Image (tube, rainbow over all chains, first blue to last red; front, side, top):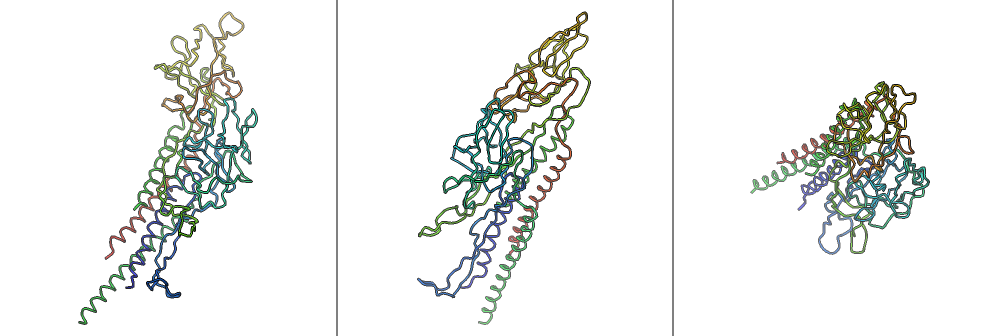
Length: 247
Length: 261
């Protein structure tokens, strides 16, 4: 039996999950280095003929599924803070940090010094240099300069160089929360032009206007789909009634 | 419905943000106050379809998975150590630090706290103390007979005594710097305590490399910038509204569902 109601139901479920993605974007509109996400919908074709070979061209019902979430990789706005350990990346690279779970990547260059002079992120994970070693500043390094290529320098000479990596397919990075991404394909390649900016931090790339507009559109689409389900129910019940009356 | 909870975390985060901003504005006139800023982080993610998993038995790999973030949390509240502007008071025991460093203060509990608030005075015994009466470290006693006291940029306390041509050096004020000033714990009354995150205090005379200079007759005002705070307040309020809009939109969707016949 044809099932327009069920097809619309798949749309409703996908729409609800898409609203969650949108809610998460808006909730993180103030999270430095956050990347907005979008749900990607696809159709799921149900072949009409049951058996080994569905005849080509004989298309059945097309259900909607939210196949994937897609990350908007556009850069966020860079705002200056004047803090020497706030670092923003102009290119498409990521800073590498050492976590207990292994190497992780972040765009949120809101770093600070730990008590032992290590450069760390907000959760205390050490920021890594090109050699895979943490960047450690001595007690006498008071004026710290970070150059565009990631070189960290103080008045006592060079300290190290930040490891900035880029990924051929940043969509494959897995978001872990706390502004960190994990890579399942091994570490990224060193970025040729890291474009490190000192004293600035990258905001999230969430555009509230777009999100709110999408939210309104989604609410209406949802209502439309729900209405369709309702009408379909009415149609079915009236059809059943008519058939019964004919007897 | 996770969208409700997600937007809820967004509203809570913005509320924290407004609290931090209101504390900054409330302390606009506090001597030596350093403004704070709330910082947010994304919460955990739920994998509906894991990135990089196989989509068929021939080994095709999903180019991107379906991950749904579950909201936002407050990551940290930073203290921004930018220098506040100096305001002249002409009071001879008002000291400001121009540059890095904190005055060490001996608390009644025996602990040493650190402050940028240099509105000092003299105790009945002639010891330099803070506005609360806690002695400034190292204890410096100004002789009762002193006609005038000069404190120079290097923190040397020079007392002019009757019958002496040269002023007498009665002590030198020390200032402390930390590897990570952000790791100091604020305990109120303009006082900060050292923590494992801040590292050990490194004491030296003012004016040494990396240390600030002492200025007599000045106090350091707070570094709160009214324009910036009001702008952040507006942004926070709008962000709060947008999150509440998500809640009402989700509610609308749910009530549409509930009305289905």
